[in-house]
Length: 254
Length: 210
Image (cartoon, rainbow over the protein chains, first blue to last red):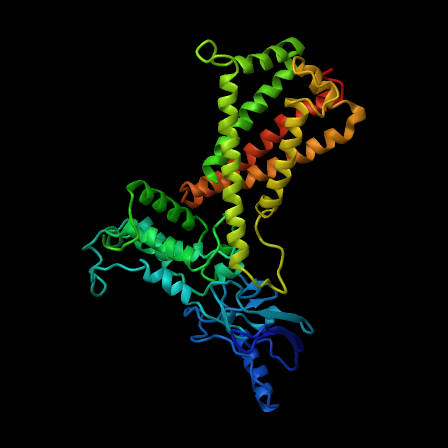
């Protein structure tokens, strides 16, 4: 396959940045998208140019490091797939592919396609954990959990924190991430003692980080490589309303 | 957004039911319109009830617009650099057009008040003859008024289709099955409301009401 790539190049956080066109020949349809970028980078290095910086780690679709806006789709055109698990057979020979970083003020660009997702860490630090030491996995019968709750919590726990929901959201909101990280705990017995301080703390941290507000536009779930359902946000809203009615504050454990 | 939106949607239902009284004839419709000014009598003097209702609606409208403005400003601040390549979003047309649709509805409401409440822009403009005002308003030679009215009502319909679902979600609707039901309910509500409002001008246009 012969492709034309238009890639966002930005030397550093202060650089203005621009789209740069690179023709890439002899791409195998069996390559992953990141392998195709590796091939481009090897050629750039051989010709003495600066390689394109992009995030990646496990390349198995479970670490959440990779994240590229490919032709306007977060993680590319294939649903339920991270950019690293996307293969070039999804594209046509001769196609022009636009590659951009996630765009959000809470995710400032570090270099080229690499963004700083530290804002997600701040949301987790504001309550996305249980303070009691729970030890290793308990014996399954010791704390009964309803099957439906266990399934829904697991569904939320599948979130890899890649940021595609923010990238796809027309409001630049991180509510799907926040809701997933919240409900994986609020549906389980271990998460109950801090349930209402957690929701206030995490939503406050989300807003302070500069994410937009959720308007239920529904862009996040189709972009999510793990398919976290939109109704997860409804669980967050319900907990938030209950917490507000109880007058909970945002201090975990209080 | 959800609470003020629900208040306004309840008013839309009552307003639509009132409009449909146009089919019961001139005397009945005019009597209904005059009764609206007298609700609460003799407990409340004069048109007090009407003014209380108007105040509640005005507060709801202003709060709704303030909340929408805050959301729009936050959204703009959250994405300072736009995508060079952005597909049309996956979501519904209704969800995409909430903001501009809202502005169109606001402009329509201002026109609508000048037309049928104060009578300033109405060809008859006689507050004592609401039936005559309506019939004169949608007369066939004033087709552009009917066109604008139709477009505005469709904008309200789209606004409600996403707005009603979104209100359920904001108030804690949390199951996938409930989401399907909320979306269906929002669609049915929007379609029924549109139909209820549009049937009046088209009845005048076709001579069914004259």
